[in-house]
Length: 204
Picture 1: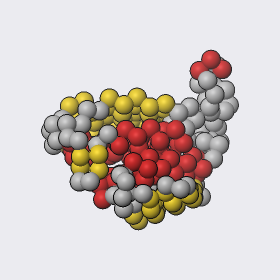
Picture 2: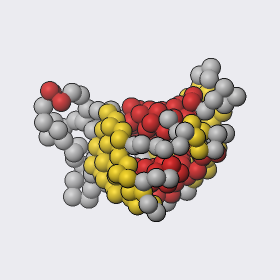
Picture 3: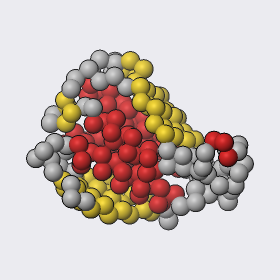
């Protein structure tokens, strides 16, 4: 079973995460940040990754630490569940419309963290949450998941729609990338025989 569990405790946050890559999209999420909860529920539902998150933090200051550390913990749990990444499809992409908005995500579970973020958000806040924090979440997720992640909002005017389309695009891309390829279920999807390292190390 491809399950990952992470406990992350600092002076700023206390977070526990459990993921099941082969789930059905069942979620139980509580971060203390309403809009972040909503987005993580979308991530679980549309990736079919079962997700449990419990997070507490210094939200009396702002939502930054809980947002970033939740991204770190979820990425870590998925990386743990992937193990040696044997047999996975590795790549995934998705194009998601939401009313006037269109978002695109491409992901490579290469074990080489990198984020390209081309998302313009018209509003500064959604609920209590500052919208600049969404980039921080995606950056943190990519870092600990070991994902090369390209996220783009191609167009849109409603900030809620743009952010939600981005999380749904990530979910669908992730769903494809973590799936076991029955034609190569015992192989690492790399000519090197291992995922990770620098581009200069050889072909991927």
